[in-house]
Image 1 (tube, rainbow, N blue to C red):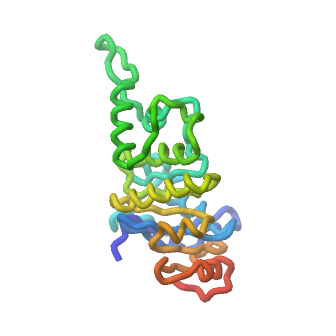
Image 2: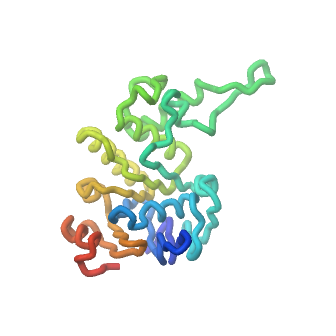
Image 3: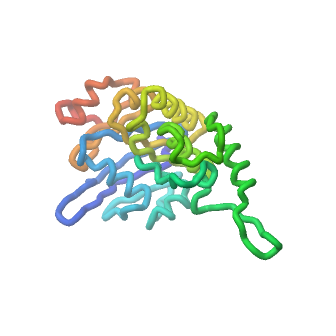
Length: 250
């Protein structure tokens, strides 16, 4: 199996606590891998190791089969690894296109000497990426605070895709959304998969996982407790792996 992104025996300790213990996992281009486990299982720590928030104490991270060093979230972004956390990290007082370019704004020269924001280019580029993902937001001048939860999730995803994400990590992408908006976000995940993006999803929503994921990796107490193909398993079996009543599969 040829993974786009892979961890090998990655470990993270906090004092006497081993939060992630010798975890090996991977995700292919155009694949959705769901990362499941109870609270405290190590899921969030694992994605923070991949996204550069934490540095591993042991193990390695590979991209396209080559070891990479991720010292910070900026390093992860430079490698095409984008993470969308549950809070989405959007500026609610800014509009749609300003959020897509947040921290990476396009500028132009005014009077030949002064750098000013190029609103026209940012709006045009934002519309292109939204159209590519079939996302419908009536006005790109709408502030984030006026958008629905699903639309906000779509803006966060669009920002990642515009900046050429190869690997997209999504932390509880459908949390606190209504049923209709959950469906839209899941359809968007399927669209990203079809465009060759490698996706890792953390979710407590079993229906969502079985709707979009190809593989499920279960963590328990910091270790990888099991790995199954969605087509070969059932929600009951996955719950059994999460709580420890099922035989370990790796």
